[in-house]
Length: 80
Image (tube, rainbow, N blue to C red; front, side, top):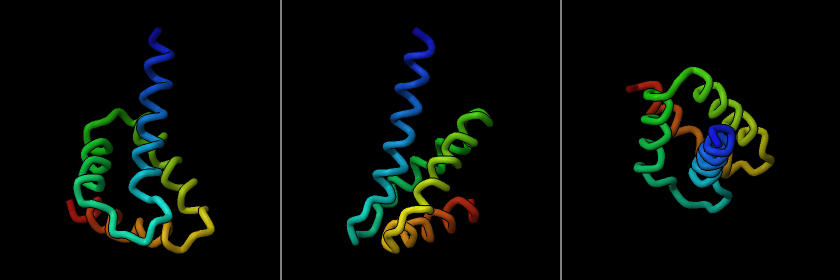
């Protein structure tokens, strides 16, 4: 049961990153960026590493729109 819960939470975190960095040429809502930052600040080291892996995977995306969406996120996470 615990393993299933972890898998669901991991999936939710990957969807959170995917949703914040979709291919639509729209600005990512600030609440999504804050949600990711809060998750990283309050989570265990293993979760932070997992989310970092999701982020690095998204940065490999060929779309410049996806890559560009990380710029404000990085600024938000560094300044807080």
